[in-house]
Length: 296
Image (cartoon, rainbow, N blue to C red; front, side, top):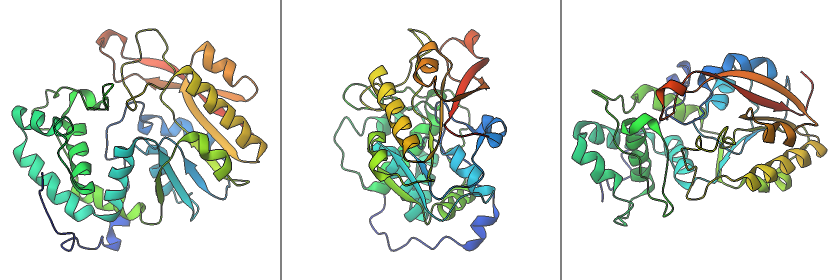
């Protein structure tokens, strides 16, 4: 399925884009936009390189960029290929992306949503920019902005009931593109961070949260669930990075399992609002943890 064939039409993002505050352009479960002010006092004062292994909506990166606290070397990783592709396209081909999003916006209706959602099931070959436009369109029009795939890796969230969904903000995407220009974006598993790390790097980890109950795990981060073994592996990475002299900060749910995993580190409690839950009666303030391996 081809919308545009030529990359030569893309214009250069103007320097004026950096004058606009940069914000997340995707809805993402567990996004940190509403928690930033609780996080600000917890960031290390100085560090050499900034690294994230679960970029998600990117709220922490964007805050640090807006506040001019980022070093020149920034690395954003994730093992979600579609997510990394979106960030790469926003960085490198934002103008073509915007034109494709205009087409999605003009075409949006129920049958069109399911047609676009089903492209992965039909093995339709899409270019990277077409894949990025598809994910953004689905993300902004699906139920609650969930990213969820089934065991075959097919996106399976139904359409949301929005009267006039704001699929994209052109100026905002251009500003994000400007912010990402010198950022390294890679598909990479968090387990590889130990070999990659250097002393005084700052690693922020925002993994899929450990479920607070047997029924609260309502998303799949990828085709495979993020299991307790993965949580254990991440805790081992956190410990190894500490031994290498890195600054590490991690967000997760407030559960006995997580508290035990990180019992040897500083644990701060954060008040968060549960915004995505199938039961509206369970949406409200909950406790989350932030784990630090350094002193505030």
